[in-house]
Picture 1: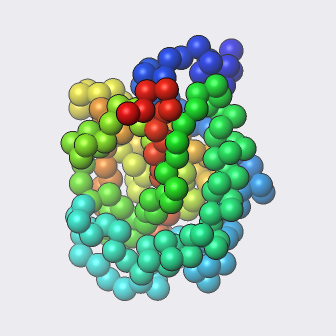
Picture 2 (picture 1 turned 90 degrees about the horizontal axis):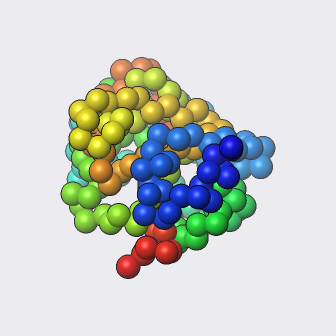
Length: 206
């Protein structure tokens, strides 16, 4: 049975744990996130750090503070939104069918600069008042493989951390509510670029 068909038999309350660490592939031709961002920034995304200067190790309070973040958010509606909304409505909706959901209007942009990390701390989102009706999806755009990628507990409370790779053309979900997760210092010479977003499952949303 395909993953898509399995989801039809999963109750909404169990969907987040069922999807934990599962990966889905999409068409890069239909959803060219990397290409539109490289056109926006005027450089290869894995070399974005060469244009941003030097930063101290990011903490939770400032891991969204670079010029690259400002450029992404200020240009989101014009450049990324049409592809993102098409992706939500024509890819993700089919993956999660028959489950209905609300979605994060503007995804959270992430960059892991060489010598730095893209998540300011290891944490569970439940520690910051995120609720059990949420799903979390991460979409890797550049260099989201190996050491710079997200680290997450394999199971809630296990203390066993796995590297969750997400090459361009794929998207994964993980249990951001109950599993400790974060990132380590990027020890490569390339910038890691991704964005992530949350869904609120309509059936159990409050």
